[in-house]
Amino acid sequence: MSKAQLAPNRIVSVNLCADEMVLHLADRGQIAGLSRNAADPSLSAAAAKARGLNIMRDSAEALLVTDPDIIVAIPKGRSDALAMLGVRNYRLVTAPSAETYPEIVEQLRQVGTAVGHPARADALIADMDARLAALPRNPGRGKVAAYYQRRGFMTGTGTLIDELMERLGLVNLAGKLGKPALSQLTLEEMVAARPDYLIMESATAQVTDQGTEMLHHPALRDIPKLWIPQSWTVCGSPEYVFAAESLAEQIETIERAKGAQL
Image (cartoon, rainbow, N blue to C red; front, side, top):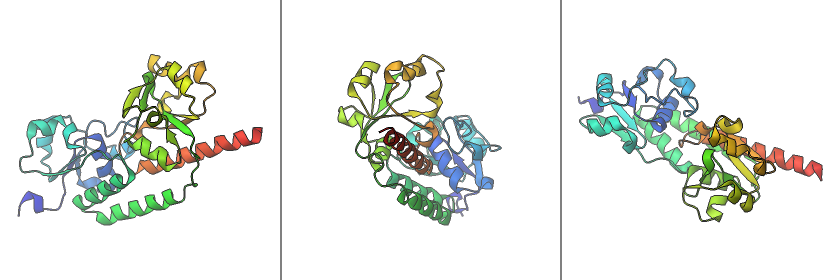
């Protein structure tokens, strides 16, 4: 019997988005190795689950030592170790980055089947579907929002953040301005655009350097802020639902406060 036909008792994940899928779906005893970012809570929403597991260097040697049954790479192209090692005889499970909720669902099913837990994936998807269905309807009401990051970077259309905005009834300022998936907008340009909301990473709520200082400029003071951890959206993962729930709640809180002032 070939290694590909054996039960996946030694699963290795070689990049952040694959780490999150494996940590959500595999048993701890199945996981032989995770990427170096798996235990970083600023990047991985599943970092707590990675504690005590093997965190690998991104090298072909580190990958070979684990002697994996299955290698999970989402997306494949972001692993230096895989590039050096080649596919060899290892079973490789890969997919493009998930930029929409249906793509997250598809990846959960794919990885769930690969690691031997399709029912676990189905249960997780059912819970996610139910929570999204319970969201308030159209909390954004067509208002304009910008996902504004340190040093003035703004996330555009065709991204997971953009899809999340659309789900909540928000209009992405980047799309309105015809910007690409990632662009930079100066403070002056942002003030002139007059968005109704700024969506920002929770880690930038405090000034830590020049890149975050601009996000706290007095010129932006009157634009309502919505905060979410970067780890909820850096990958297409089940934490997408947490982001949707949190943003919907924040929008409703802000709008209730505005109504009370009228």
